[in-house]
Length: 138
Image (tube, rainbow, N blue to C red; front, side, top):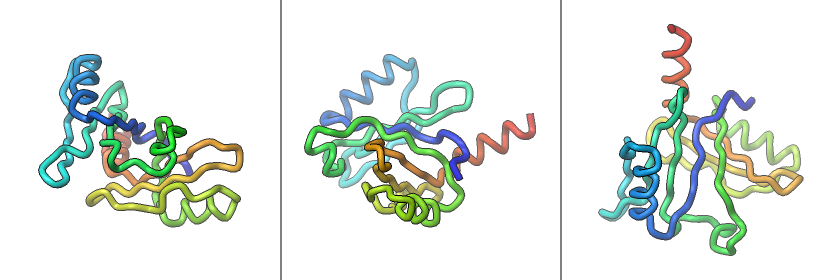
């Protein structure tokens, strides 16, 4: 079911400061910015040999765990069917953390807390499939 790493997301109370800090660290600007209400709500960098995604989300969109100070980064694994994968995880005893949410065409996420207290994210990510396709032809 889990095909490969797609995205690691972090939260920041000051998204613009986090964007600048990571841009300096990585030596590149984010390739994607999603504004909501005219203000950036999400920025994303592609890094490494496989162009993995590092996303930073404005904390105003964080879930309950973050607001309570108990959340860390969420690692998302590509799945071909987020709804089906999410349902399977819940059926296996994982607790719902985030129901499936579409963040734009080609990007759907969901997350659970596994029975051992770990956050597990699943995501349909068209960029993962693009990179996979480009590697297959190499």
